[in-house]
Image (cartoon, rainbow, N blue to C red; front, side):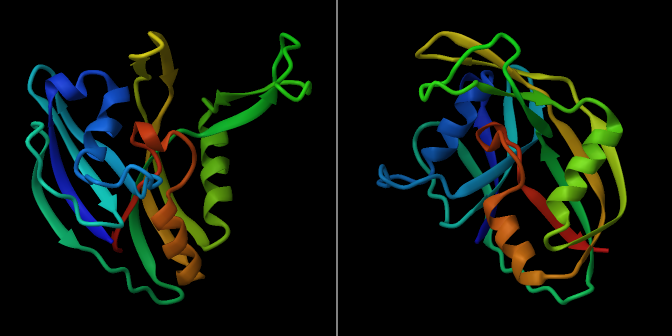
Length: 202
């Protein structure tokens, strides 16, 4: 894997829906590939641009579209069972419920919709369920964040997701499972900068 710091100019980053598209431009000549990178907004300056932390399977390539690679390095994870790690994760903790208006999906079954988990205890439980396959949570702080609003350019539809930032310490019981989870990300809304769990030795 590669870990990179990327700068996206404001004209490309002002609508969060377009940040993912700008990052795709760093991996040219791959139209048939599924997304194999995760990212997190680290800093955003209105009118100037956005700094991104990106984890990717392939090394990003500089382009002429304004998005700039500040730094990029190969990133290999070697963990031991029982190891303690500091972590950071921006996530979109949600639950799925049956649509209250009685709408049906294409198969004629009750339509389901995602709703954000807004209570701290529910957000804690959500993360605990995500961790239990590879470890346990020793300590955790949840930072509430303002909603992210976006616009889908082609459909001219607007949307909103509610993110939170998790910081804390986890203990790893199954290193192989954790590495697989880290590569694929945690939770939904990965196209909007959620799911990347970054780690450091505790």
